[in-house]
Structure formats: C-alpha cells, structure tokens
Length: 460
Ligand SMILES: Cc1cc2nc3c(=O)[nH]c(=O)nc-3n(C[C@H](O)[C@H](O)[C@H](O)COP(=O)(O)OP(=O)(O)OC[C@H]3O[C@@H](n4cnc5c(N)ncnc54)[C@H](O)[C@@H]3O)c2cc1C
Image (cartoon, rainbow, N blue to C red):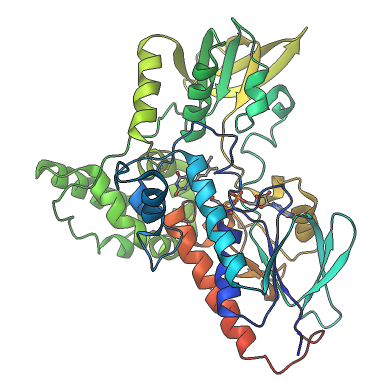
C-alpha cells in the first residue's frame, strides 16, 4: 500500500528534527523535507555565513534529542577531542555541521526520508479538506497527507518599517562587505543580533564609528553556569495576577542572591514552566507583560556567550561603540549619506539626528507573521489556513500543534513547529525547547497516521 507523503517545509533545526523523528516513527510512510536554500540542516541560525559567531548556550545543553542529553557534546568530543568542555560555547557553524550530520545519519537509516531543494510557495486542500496539495517553486503540485510548517525565522522586526529599504540585513555576510574604511555605521537593535553585528564589524575592521540604537538600550546579560544553591519555591506565581507575580519573583531573586545564589538560577528554574504560566495569564496581563516586563525578561532570559559580551564591552569602553536610546522617527537618504532621527524617551527633549554611511538591521527575526513577505506564508494567511495571534508573537495553534484556521477550527493536515509556537508557549525560541516540540509533534502525527494506516493514498 502507498501513502501520500508527509511534507515538512523548512530544514532548519525544527524541520530537520521533526522530519527525522517522523521518518523513524513511520518507517512505511514517505517523509519529504523541503528546503529552499542549498543546505538542509543549519537553517538561519547555524549557517556557514556566521563563521565566527558563537552559540549562546553551552555545549552540554545543545543536544538535538531530548532523550539523549549528551548527543551534541559527544559529537564535538569525537570531532575535536577532549579539550572541549561541557560549558564551552562553540561556533554556531559547528552546530550547523552537527545538525547536518544528524540528518545524514537519518537519511542513511531511513529509506522513507528524502530532502527536496524546491521551495514551497502555496498550499491548498483536496475537496474533502483532509489533505493538502502543495505547490513548489517550479509549479509542480504534490499531494501530501500532512504538512508541517517549519519555516522559522523570516524577515526581521524592522523589515516592515517604512525605512527598512535604507538598512542592510545584519545576518548577511554580504552586508559587511559594503562597509568601507572610515565609515560610520548605525546598528538598529541592542540584543544578541546587535552583538554579533558589532563583533563582525570589528573583525572586518573598517567601521570608524559604531552606534547601536534601541528604544530601551538594554543589553543581553552574559551567561554564567548555575550556582549550586537550591532555588526558592516559585509555585505561587501562576495563581496571582501579573503585578503580584513580578513582585514575588523579584523578592525571590533578591532572597536567592542574599543567600549567595545567582539570579540566572531563577530564570533557569522558571523556564520549564514558562509555557504554563503564559497560558494561565489573563489576556490583559499578557499584553501588560509584553509591554512592560518583556524587554527586561528577554535580556535576562536570552543570555550572551561570556566571550562575546566581554569583547563587546571592551569596544564600548574604548569608545568604538556607543549605545543610544530612543525611537526612530525618520530615516532619509541624502546623496548617499543616511540621516536617522531619534526621539529620546523624554518627550520634552528634541529629536537627535545621527548621520551614517550604513544602517544595519540587527532587530532579530520578525515575530509578526503578517509582515512576512514569503509567498508561502502570504498564501497561507490569505487562505485562512494560518492566523496570527492577537499579540503578534506567532501563529494560532492548538496544543497538539495543529494550526488553528480562520474561524478557530484546528486544521486536519497543517501542523506548526519552530518559533511561530511562541504564540501558544511563549518559550519556543531556543534548542532546549524546540527539540521537545519537534519530538512531540512527530509523536502526535505518527499516532494519528498509524491509527489510519488502512486507508489508501489519496484518501488521507
Ligand atoms: C542567529 C541565531 C542564533 C541562535 N543561536 C542559538 C543558540 O546559540 N542556542 C539556541 O538554543 N538557540 C539559538 N537560536 C535560536 C534557535 O535555535 C533557532 O531560532 C532555531 O534554529 C530555529 O530553527 P527553525 O528550523 O525553526 O528556523 P530556521 O532556522 O529559520 O529555518 C527555517 C528553514 O526553512 C527554510 N524555508 C523557509 N520557507 C521555506 C519554504 N517556503 N520552502 C522551503 N524552505 C523554506 C529556510 O530556508 C530555513 O532553512 C538562534 C537563533 C538565531 C536566529
């Protein structure tokens, strides 16, 4: 009996791992991993472009498989020998090679798994609405029993701004080739992407002045291993309104630090329960959290590799980089020279003007999927198969990963994984969570399809 394949769209970390789990769980079911770029596995985060950038998480916590916590660490020990320690921050391209290696091993083992380097540009349903017809970039149409959307980090938070045309993407190596000796560079964003951008500018050596701009000027804190002290009980947090839980959390932090512990311990302790906390928050508290708490939350939660933060701090101390706070109110291009208007937080103060040769967009991936211009996402939104959540963090999704369609019904055939899951789980950005989602989604799809194996291709 033959079955319509399962299509996994996007072969970054999330799609690759989902496809591997699916192929292992459903050995008789074809699984096609679609990846429009030339490399399947690394995705946006771990491509070779970022030759020097480091992971933000130590080696021991970067296994791709939840039930084999040492998998990545053992891989790097085999590659580089005993000098690699579990707390080391390795180059991101090493992680890209690791994911590629996981995929190659799975392709060797699972004859039902294959990679297709054609982009997916549209999806429609069959007449009964139970399966999908996907359209590829060469206009081939492929019938699929299930589609897993793993298209990940697309666009940037600034890419929908009026002034995006004046910026260079911070994640592209070619952006840095445009910087000439003595140029002044403005970098938009002060998060992890900005630190990567500034370190790349410094390596390249041409920029004479670098200004990093954001609304709040907050910088990601540097990582430190957990202290050995037990963390205080945080079980009361879900039962109280946001204001009270923030107060309790801050009190617990202070108490923990007084005992000799580190604030990072509490952020780590809260991480597994963050999705439950997010779901229990009232809609009003979620909005308040995003507006008032999340800028602080993000810089503590998403920490920076210590070596990267140290290098960055040195550049600030030397006056090579300066940090500016404010809201961008205009960007003009006058005869090739850019002029950016920055309104200070103090509304009474006048707009400041910054002149530059280049502006680098280092605002990080877009969360609002309605701003993504890729035809696949635009078509899915237009057809109502994909719906943004009200906070514009990702896509509306059922707890079992089925996309919620316009009208609120879960789809029979479309599943979502990767950072778009932030809308439901909030904590769905980094490998320690994304690997759990990839495995759980595959288990869900496999259970569903195994229960239907008696129905032939074309019907499901
Ligand atoms: C720069 C960066 C560094 C990070 N560093 C760390 C870290 O150190 N530690 C950590 O735990 N987390 C880190 N993260 C977070 C996390 O690991 C990544 O966001 C994660 O890799 C997301 O993977 P993904 O597969 O969901 O998305 P992506 O990596 O964005 O992959 C999506 C893939 O889908 C493909 N695609 C998109 N649309 C289509 C289409 N229509 N048809 C076919 N293919 C398509 C794209 O080409 C891409 O390869 C980092 C994230 C970024 C952006």
